[in-house]
Structures are given as C-alpha cells and as structure tokens.
Amino acid sequence: MLVRFGYVAMSLELENCSPSKTITVKNLERIEGAEARINRLRRITRENLTNTMRLLYYNAAHNIHLFRFTSRLVPLATHPIVSDWDYTGDFAEEWDKIGKIVRDNKMRISSHPDHFTLINSPKPEVLESSLRDLEYHDNLFQAMDLDAAEMVIHVGGLYRSRDSSIQRFKENFRNLPKTIKERLLLENDDRSFTAADVLGICNELGIPMVMDVHHHLCLNNGEKTGDLLPGVFGTWKGRLPKVHFSSPKSEKNCRAHADDIEVDSFYSFLLEAREHDTDFDVMVEAKNKDRALFNLLKGLKGLKDVDVVEEAAIRV
Image (cartoon, rainbow, N blue to C red; front, side):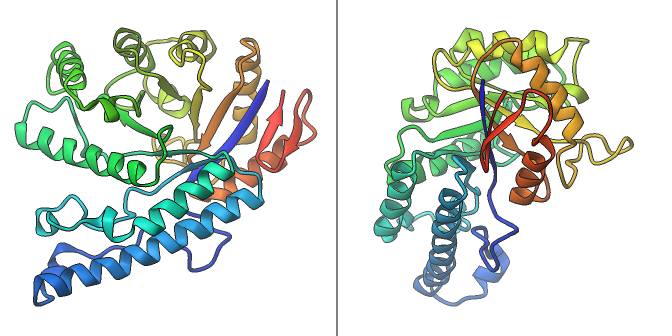
C-alpha cells in the first residue's frame, strides 16, 4: 500500500515565500483611482504567483506530489470593489507556467474554499457569495489548465435542522456549474456533520469523500475509522482517495491543529487502513506545514512494516 503526503499552502523552510499576501478593503479604498487600486492588487498577486512557483519547484525537488494552494492567491478577487478586474487575463503567462510545473511533475493540486463558503445556507446572499468563491477557485484552475485540480468543501451549517440542511445541500449541489461539480470533494467536519453523514451524501450525489480523521475523532456516533474507510474509499470510484490528518493541539483544545502530527496515532491509523490495501494520499494539516510532514516521515522511519520510499511517500 503506497501512501503519499502533502502539506498546506506554504513552506516554513523557504524564506520570504508567502503566496497569501493581501490587502484589506479599507486600505485599498484609501488608494485614489480605480486603476491605481488594481495596480496595487496586481503587484501583490504577482508576488503571490512568484512564490507559488517557488513552492512548486521546492515540492518537486523533495518529491512532494500533493499540495494545497492558498485561497488568497488573488487578493480580494471576489469582492465587489474589483468585480471588473480580469485577474486571469492579466496573469495568463504566470497561470500557464504554474500549470505546466504541476503537470510536468504530476502533482496533485487542491484548494479548500474558506469557511464562509456554505452552499447549504438558507440565506440567498450567503449562497450567492459562496458561488462566487467556488467560481473564483474554478477560474484559477481553468487558467492553469488543471482539469484534475480539486476543491474540498464541507456540507455547511445545521441551521436548526440537520435533515433540511442536508436536503438543501443536495439541491444546491445539483444546480452548480458542471466544471465546479466535477472538482468538488466533500469532507466531514468536527461540529455538524459526521463522516457517516457525509458518506451518505457522497454516495447519493456521486461526490468523492475526503475522510478527515481528526474531525471524525471530534464528532462521531461511535463509528470506528477503519470500519468507515471501505465506504469512503469506494466513493472515489477508481481515483486515488485522499485523507486529511492532523493531531489535536491539546486535550482541552481538541479541535485545534497541533504543530506536528502525533506519530503513534498516525501509525495506528495506518494499520487500520492497511487492512483495506488501498493506495491513498494524505494531506498533513499542521501548523508546521512542510516541517510537520518531514517530522512525521522521520518518526515513521524504522517502524514495523513501514518503508520510506521517498521524502514524502511510504509503503506499508
């Protein structure tokens, strides 16, 4: 069983390489003239894209095949103040180069639209804002010519009725543009919808499910992780499944992510997953980003039945 690892958004090993630089609406409004405002956004975006390329080259050098782009590549892209800005056209050359790096190195790329992206919201204005955010991420991936790039979302809020909220998610999902629907992956969360809830939705709608192991430990109805994995992996229908893994920051603050991954708990999960003999990818969600990935692989090295085959891959 081959397991590959990736990390989220930025590296702690590369200096001055943030791909998430931005500006507040308030500060942008202080700039006189629409063109001057757009030029400020262009300068920030250009720096973010340059740093994204640095990150991708770094990942390729370390055989990291899995990476999640920040949602802040283009600052304020979905805000009405810059609604006429053609951010894909302005940086066509950069988007093309990023896509080529990804394709040449066979990287698996994803994004995770922000927590306010709630397609099961009963409020029309929230749904409209959520659709704009999904369109923004889809626009970027289309500009990069990355048909296989994925977008991970949650079901959303409970809004006083679990059944109504799930039904609203299903209805709104069916009405999404085809290009967005084909990218979406659905993840269980730690407050509202369990892995079992999400698995049922995914089976009905044909959405691949991302199993978040940490979230499952925070919110479940007694289901064991290993018992759910065959069903979760089955939603991928021949595609390579993906799992999210993080460790609790503390017993008191169990929902927050720790700096690193607790090796013993991940090893226990590996042994459960091995029973189903399915290759899969793991997104490391930890404060220490790429360092957490390398620390985890270092901790796994030498454990029984674990063979580290690359800097970011093991065989079990």
